[in-house]
Image (cartoon, helix red, strand yellow):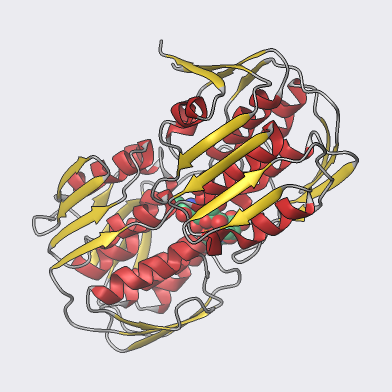
Length: 417
Ligand code: EPU
């Protein structure tokens, strides 16, 4: 298993180009199954998760070519509406295929995702939404079997779940009649899925609001070229990195509008952030002010940057409270950050971080994608050498993260075993 070795303490300077968004491309890849056709996706990040989704599409019968951030998908040959446990267990987003499969085939067999590194992560909203649209659902040997001809209906989510909104949208575009999704997620990754589906001939209104309306259509187009939006979480990770580690960097290929909550918090911490059209320049300040943060669905502060924000606060001048209101138990990074000397007290979903002057390098372990990113940041800010193990987690969501940091002047290397 690969390891990352970091000698911390070197400030970051230069330019880093942000890739396409993992959480945007995965549902769009799933959506190519809905209508048999030929799709050309560009700005596709080369990640373990995009390769897993490509593998899932191949299992379903699609032809997928994937090179140089371009992906060609031929979904005309799809003939097997099954998402097996082997793939779903390695990537929960495989469950996003459920709505697409039932929309195309009137039948889907999708392994029920289990828990993940930080908790159970249920799928009850997805299931209730499909039932509202008239699907019959059974659990058989750990697989959800969904079948039936779908009819539009009103769906109201108790919480604006990103995944359940995606599945409901994909299921509803070809359902008979009108569907209304209330309390829908408003993340940019939902907006771009709406754009993709509408360009394909779907009729969805209410984009960027919490009420999405879908007029079902009988058929969709059979080809589309589509560019994946920039990854706001990768961008946020580099913004926080510069604020914590020191220096001055410019992010290119970003959409600053998607990062308002993060930029506002960074400014409150004393970091200088200058916004251009597709670029963001960030200059670290000498002192990191303590800034409390509570995660929330978009446009709130993303839970996917909670661990990185915690890394930043480990060196703040006083004490900051960090609350995760999206995932109550997403805190596996706390114990690892503490190994570097961080002073963090955790009670339920509330972490209190008291800043210290110096983090000290140590061997630490990756536990999930974003926790790993937080550890890389903290180790780059720490004195001395750190070794991060189980880095396959980071490869699920960040392309060549160590090369990007090397280009900014960091002393970070991967050792392949
Ligand atoms: N929830 C339920 N029941 C459901 C679905 C969700 O109780 O049926 C709860 C969850 O347990 C959680 C909350 O609702 O407490 C929000 O979950 P959501 O469904 O919005 O999350 P998701 O769709 O499973 C996506 C991202 C996550 C990101 C969350 C929140 C993808 C592939 N994943 O997950 O990204 O944290 O939205 O923004 O888009 C990551 O990239 O590292 C990652 C985990």
